[in-house]
Image (cartoon, rainbow, N blue to C red; front, side, top):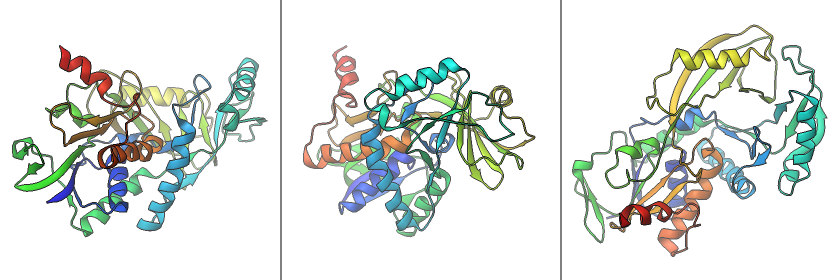
Length: 351
């Protein structure tokens, strides 16, 4: 009998696998790579919501846990993952500059917001009012992470690259059975795929479609992440990521011309050099109405758990949420109330 079966190998699944391995627990992963939200997010870690100049939920604690986590993964996998890149928020006016300085005085935000206005020196950008700099930011190469971690598990014989088959799954009280193999616990870390899970599909996982472009712009020569109406993120060589959109009705991973047009129109409001689009991808972010993760135990089947709902901040949240869930299962530690699925379970099962 193994300790855990993990369903899904995005940021949530990888983070939980790492926790299990470090704690000496046995596990197997089932993943069909159908969910792409870990790729579409662009891999940014940014503690500040730049539209409103507010601190993201639990940002400092999450960041302090996430950065050592990815550093350890770099050493383990032998790949470069963490690219520390400043985020520059383009100001649209003097009024926005003043709002930035007001925000930088607030407790919590003062740690992350620089009070020096950064002058624009890039002729390829229209930014007459300069930028505000967010400190301790960067990009995790999620493509390299997902690929290399899948290879790592495959080499160890721990990854089944297929869709999870609920017809071959059976909760048996003290343990669970999947394809005739017994496990003590199962953790569903399947992103928006949770909507097709008969045990947890009652949870209000809304799902928000995001689309991301990769452009080639040899004349851009920008080393910072620029945030205006869209992000531009240095990727490799002359390539930059541009994103992202937020759509609530379309639940497919198919890129659309509508989103491409939207991204390009916004990009051209400040990018003044020539470029070409070389890639376009889409994915469904696992978003929740109250903007908090979905972590916890099934109300009836006590060895079924969910690790989900990270939205667009999976890079920061995943290590934090995985530790919370592991300690809850193995050590009986209470989950934070604001992430515990009991906030929805009680209402659903009382109806």
